[in-house]
Image 1 (tube, rainbow, N blue to C red):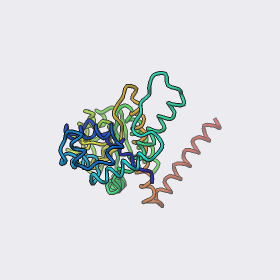
Image 2: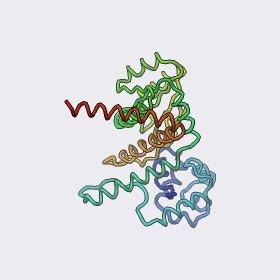
Image 3: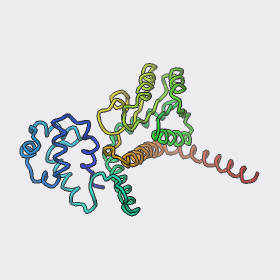
Image 4: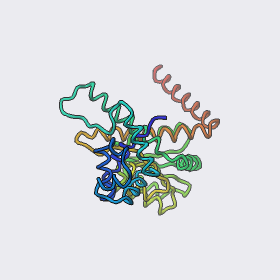
Length: 288
């Protein structure tokens, strides 16, 4: 298994931590090698915080103890490649840009896969299978993920609807039966239109699934089932957003293939039918 990137996880949550825990996080990011040799009390002293704040910080980043945090840091530091997130700089070579984008994306993908809760994933799979209709919504780059969800589950014979107009989506949700699912995507977890649509869905008894970045954001709090991906803090050229998008696509793909595997026989037939339909359509267009 790949070593979890605890540095990337801390960077991802940094701005959402309480002040005392943020001081600890910043000290760790600036001095990762020194932390490995420190006690919890020494770290607290160096970060001008309390030992209890260090314990709370560990819980905030989903680490069981300070000892486990040190083990994760030690494993990460022992690797030869660059750690953490690295944004694009002026006048970089194409080779450097390639290395940074690949490194950022791989780290975000690996840490997201490590963090995903398998019990939540299984619950989502069961909910989507039993739903009569799946409504999907996302804004901006998140719309690309919404389209990916739509295309994947249409292949399985599900009724899936995605519309970029939030008014149409709101109307559809209000007119739906309770055996409906609303799957929404928001990188920040604070997109106003999406939070309002979640409120509408819940008011009509519709089950809600949200995909957003790791942290205690509005979408995570509102939805029935929450998925979170890891991302680095935004920077000038927003290469962090590219890594986040890859992590979102990964999350959707994990749900899709787990769904297909769990209900293999019925999904195998549906995928074959959809493939045959596309091939026939393509052949007709080539013949005309």
